[in-house]
Image (cartoon, rainbow, N blue to C red; front, top):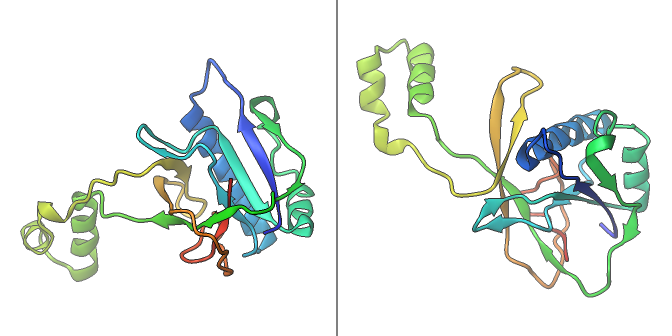
Length: 187
């Protein structure tokens, strides 16, 4: 995690910033799946809880070799008119670190009930008694709207960027560049 590159979304009158971030993040996800790597992480320098948003910059972290391997895929095809890509650079000295992780919520009670009905062969009434409305959660985290490659369905990828820590924590990153415990430099 000693190098990074920034991808800045450019203003576009036809597409909103969140829509472009979702498209960019989808492309990164496919590239990371293709690479089969767990050594590339992401952060969002403009991450904000109030107002809620990921911002307009996607920062990709890794070693110089890992970032070169990623860039060799030409995974940004179709996004070049909407972004400005920085060259890979060395992480500044004396930076803090943070864990950037995915958070999953039970946001749709009806879907949970349908799934239970199908899985257990229950009636709607039985599933409703087992899964009351109070189970539904309303997340208050920034998110990207992505499309599942396996099901084709859209979903919200909620992102939690933790508090800065003085020391890095090594570990693995998933195919979204997120981790449950590993950190990326935050600056």
